[in-house]
Amino acid sequence: LQTERRFTADAAHELRTPLAAIRTNAQVLVGARDQDERERTARDLLASVDRSTRLVEQLLALARADQPIHDDKLRDVDIADVAREQLAAHLGRAEQCGVQLRSALQPGATRADPALLSVLVRNLLDNALRYTPAGGHITVMTGAGAEGPVLTVEDDGPGIPEPERERVFERFRRLPGHKAPGSGLDLSIVRRVADVHGAQVAIAAGPGEKGTRVSVRFRQAA
Image (cartoon, rainbow, N blue to C red; front, side, top):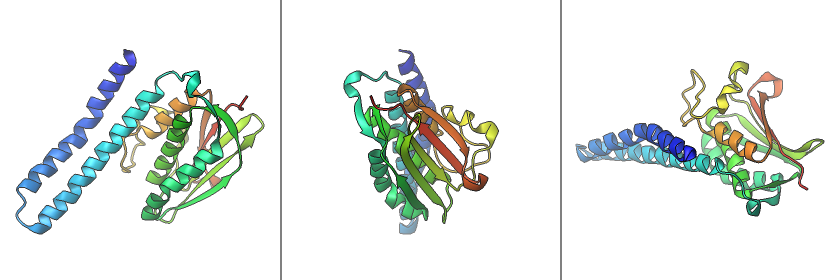
């Protein structure tokens, strides 16, 4: 019940703004005076619908991650396979953003819910793409570490100041001064999925103390 109340409150609060934008764009579209204005307003309307759809998807993912994982959902999963699948799914968006995706994928097996693991990787890539400027790079690495398999996503965006590196996991937390679109849910979903799998998430600066490196260390598969 507590989870449902929190989900309902979060959804009501966060959907208010994009729904208002949809209504405004629809009103402008109805009263448009020429074809150029109609086309421009229609594009804005579609963008508002896309933002609302993405927010609903994020809220649903968060609600799912809040539920305990049942044993029948767990499988032996190679995080390299999940990363490879998500890299392919994000290739088109990366090209549109002018960002190059790189990878260094080595096997790393863990016991996990495959669907939730895909959600975790997807949100890491979504977050990195949102903050990496055109001409930048995102590198995804996987492998079997001494203490368990590790997934790492690095970008050369603006980075996260050290005092903010724990606070960015809070729900709806946005970095001060950044105007990148988003709901502030990506990293909170990553943390929640990691928590229910007994994994550890850490944020540091990227190579050369630039950008951001997010690492998730999982348990070894039994």
